[in-house]
Amino acid sequence: MTPKQSDSSEWIGETSPRPRKLKFQRSRIKIMLIIFFNSQGVVHKEFVPERKRVNAEFYKGIMDRLLKRIHRVRPAAFCCRDLFLLHDNTPAHKVASVCQFFTPKNVTTLYHPQYSLDLSPPDYFLFRKLKIKLKGPHFADVAEIQEAVTDELKKVQKEEFSAAFHKLYGREKSLYICQWSLF
Image 1 (cartoon, one colour):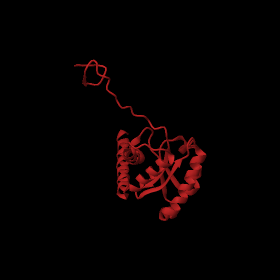
Image 2 (tube, rainbow, N blue to C red):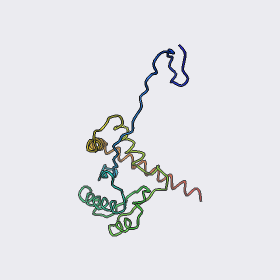
Image 3 (cartoon, rainbow, N blue to C red):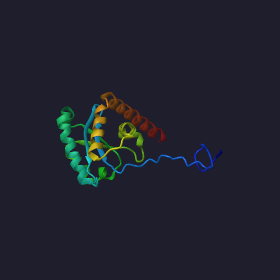
Image 4 (cartoon, helix red, strand yellow):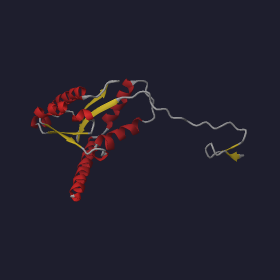
């Protein structure tokens, strides 16, 4: 028996058939989740319909539904009208019409620095958690994916959301300390 350099480091006979290797396929089904949460848990989520572009008009519709949901689910936050919304750097979030939509509603929008995933709780906390839980099973259709994601979101404890916000505060605070130390 001799090793074949082109194959894996297995010892096989020269007349033996090539060993089979598994090939992973990417999912053909893609779906986008837009989610809003605070330190107490998920406030609002929406799945973007297939082949739908998230432009300013679509996003304003989501924001309108978000504010109505906050009014129903977190009335204390809605009554004081002291809402802060941390956006990522998606172009639809920065369009003038979206900014003008927030102005009369007393919603303060915060943007984190470009190319900084440090200040994006969905990236370092929630989406990573969802991807780990949903990796492996094959889903037949979009409805099945939505159901699985919704079930996993329900399993995330309030304490985990709270911890993510404490982590965000620590990252944000250290970022400003670094910025101040540069000057």
